[in-house]
Image (cartoon, rainbow, N blue to C red; front, side, top):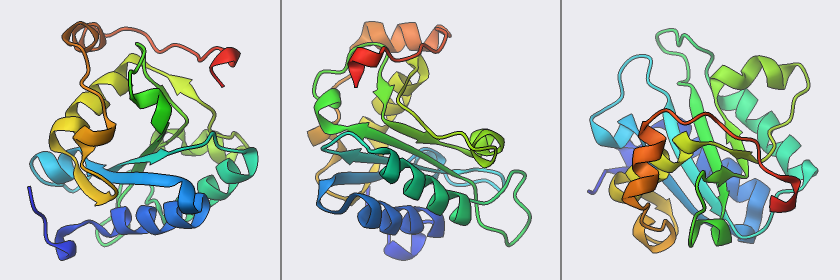
Length: 179
């Protein structure tokens, strides 16, 4: 699916610029996915972006990325003319080649987490069955903003993992050995 640059949401363009700034040459890919691609943004839709990097994030990277996202992401509910809410998931490239269920994200940002972040919380690696479904959908429908096509970096999600994810499996915390 081809999308004109003018049709890429401003929030996605902002996230791409921020990711380039924070990760530099370690940024492998950035994809726009979700409702922006799968049917169109509605008034309260957030802008869904995936980023893939080739090294674990440092606390300094997490703080910088979080600070920038808090600046550019709109608050929910979005008022007319205000920036849209952003959802960003960052993944380690080597963890996506053959993902283990449930998939772990290196960094997850969404407006539902804003209160925690404004209170001093910092996004840490998080494993969640729902991420499996996000990656399965992104592999099929995401728009490449930077890097190779989604199918080149996002492994096929086994049908059994998709079924377990859709069944409402509870979120799990990553083990410290994962890092």
